[in-house]
Length: 340
Image 1 (cartoon, rainbow, N blue to C red):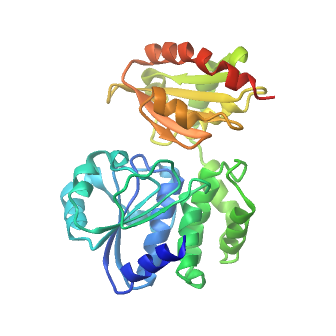
Image 2: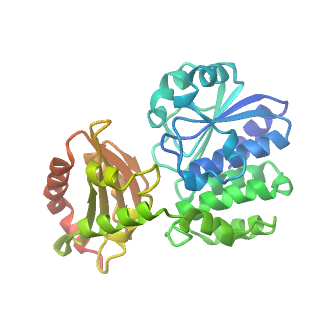
């Protein structure tokens, strides 16, 4: 944060306020971690806070401190709308456009509160009084730490806040292996660990708590994987029937796409997941090096994200979506083959 942003933040938070903190639709570890950590911090500073997310989040994140206090918009529309209407400040974390909050979009658009945005995705919309945007950051949780640091309050980071920030940083950096992980990231992690967090237990809660059905679904996903070595590309498909047969729960496919990216020689990976309830095919894209999947997603799949991790969707069924995906690969052949 620059000096002007710090002054704005301090002015906005100088006196106790009613603050709503919002995460994006289909909240992940970074969204849950950043919103909950900021909420705990602002409460410690005398503010009245409430975290609201558009829909429910995976069970493997529900152990996180203060996660039980998160209000699920889809289950509490009237209460959530009133909180948004009455808020003095609304903080939007881990997204930068109201299109990322699903059915909450109208409520946020019509709100009269001052907005604070903290986010690390590209192309932020211009709706906030304070926009703290940094695409070089590997996670919004790391940005929340720097926000607290800029306020001169890192000594107020509790073990609970640190646990949530650590979780978000860990999940959004692929357990610290993505290129977005920097020396600064590790310095933040070191300070968070000094609060007494049990980092090994955090890892176990997130990554070592799979149900038998999830592991069976992973086996099906890997069996479905197709590899196109001529494009250094691999992708995975999962149909609605395959999901239903294995008692799919929210979050069960988290990380599956990374298995395709882990294949030797692969630069570009995707997963296509059929969602018959919404008549779409959900898409996650991953890449290595400087192959930009954010641009691919924006150009072809109504989405976006980061250079090496992006999401999107298709309004076509999974078979048509896969055919289309294969058809666009020649457009990117030179870029993909340029990688050693």
